[in-house]
Image 1 (cartoon, rainbow, N blue to C red):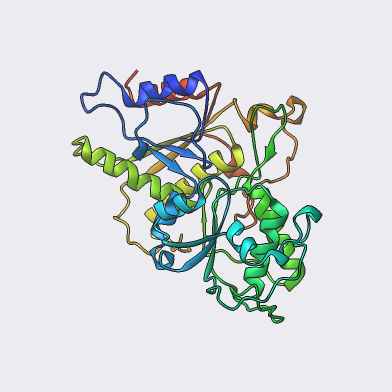
Image 2: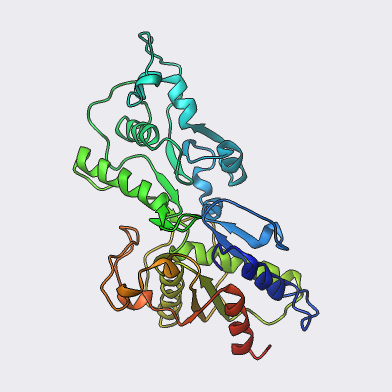
Length: 347
């Protein structure tokens, strides 16, 4: 499920996890969120998957010295994912204040002595949209172009560059405003465009997490499998229902995962989805997409129905119009859960 708010989401949560007809204390399920928890609901922490949660699978980088960008308790969040040696952009700016020159008020007033005691950075973590985009864009570029030594002024940019792990690719998202707001996907778009313009090459990701990444749905499947085992379910989970309000991330992601499952059934080879830890063989046979009209989809101009809208997905996900078509469209998440119950004969 996507990050959906309001009374309908709370009612849906109670239906899912307090289902009285099932003595096993509800259905295995999870909430896939962009990156921040707001409000209260009857949901266990292990039922919440943030967009960056699958970074736990990238254990080969957990002991590397990583630059982390985003907002909130970045160091705490990165360590919870397994990364034990992180540097924030604020810490990097403090070490090299002359790198941050856009804001005149923040420019250093005196000449700084060169530093040679700052350990090299070995990779970049992009957890979510930062507050000061200009500072983060500049410092991330400095790290990539200098091979992790931004104080050296290295001229020849290495390629391939240092590993970059990114989560949350939503270009836009709905908040209290009447129009969509910039998401982390917009920040990634800026970084990619600047890197390509400066170097003439494409920015590469070791891993892209969050919807519509297949890796995120595989991670969610593993979470729900563990929930089913704890509830004593002997039968494997065969079908996933993915409920969301954004056609480009929620519907596209669910349909992309379903396509991946059908290809796996036919034995067709697919590009690796990232991570190093081995997974149990999948038992899921299909993934059904359900679109609710309370977010990005509901904010679209009614006059645009049937028009060819621009694709807001990430650069690394090719545009496939059929993947934007939801299996079902309903008003809100509570109605979506009732639909699932009817489909499964639980109503």
